[in-house]
Amino acid sequence: MRVKNVQLKNFRNHSQLSLNFEQDFVVFHGPNATGKTNLLEAIYFLSLFKSFRDASNYLFAKGTHNLEIKAVIERSGQEHFLEVFLENRANKIFANFKLDGVRKTKKQLENFLTAVIFDPTDVELFSRSPDQRRRYLNILLSQKSREYMDNLYNYKKVITQKNQLLQNIRNGKASPTELQAWNEQMALFGTEIIVQRRQYINYLNQAISEVYAAVSGFARPIEVEYDSIPGESKGEILSNFKKLLFDSQQKEILAGSSLVGPHRDDFMLKSEGLYLVPFSSRGEMRSQILALKILELEYIKADGENPILLLDDVLSELDEERRVFLLKYLQNRFQTFITSTVPVEMAAQHVNLRQPVSDV
Image 1 (tube, rainbow, N blue to C red):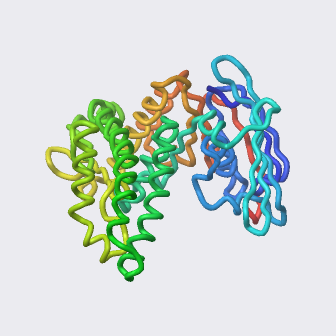
Image 2: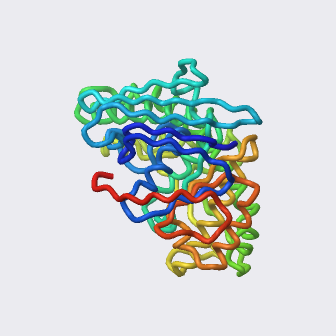
Image 3: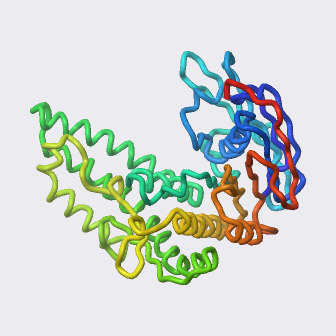
């Protein structure tokens, strides 16, 4: 998979822009506030049709209410033209999509392009709150599997409805017997989510120690611990899920909120029985995340097209040894877009964004 051209209109600070990409490595460099990250954001948006930064209403250039993102994408040797049109009407976003001139739905085009983002804040993934790690899993697995995306969407809908019911029961406006139907759906969709998360965690555990050693130059056993509803099979997970829902019903009613399920999951890195976060230097955390990102790329790639990699000012976070390793690994594997405030000494297509603007 390759992005061969991107055209932007009224996207953040880019009122009008068209760029052709001819190499596997593309470097956007220039001072701060020239829109380097905005270019990565536009490419990423074509994958899941959401930003990796903030709400969609901030994507529009100042004073505008319509934006366009268009791209020529090569898949399996065939070129396709993907178009996204967004309109902001009183802070409600309306979207239209086309592929090769034919109108499509968002659902039809999600993951037509797959993209993995790596930015400096990723280094703190394991020192942040569990909801950030769940978000990481959800984004990755949604790009890997349409089924996962659908189950996640349905699970969130069920949670919303169940939480409203729990509050009504707590306030004497509904009966606890009404929970059974929602718990059944919650267990079914939630089990599917847990199964796919566990498959990914198992994949990580098979390879992360080896990849970490290659990245860091330091061999140590690393284990990914997944904290979720237990079970070795889908049937066991489903059975345990239903039992936990039954056992926690009174607590959930008192809380007015769902306390059991994959929306409470977490995963952490361990070595020889100890969690790595409290004892890892900044450099070690970089190596851990770099190993994780490499395995993320390979996991998504396993089902077909190579994802696009977006590196947002990441090279400055890596020392020379890790930089060399990463670039050598990526070469001839993944099309990679890189941002940097200074020119990067490497064989690549260099795009110099010179004019800073104030309303990025």
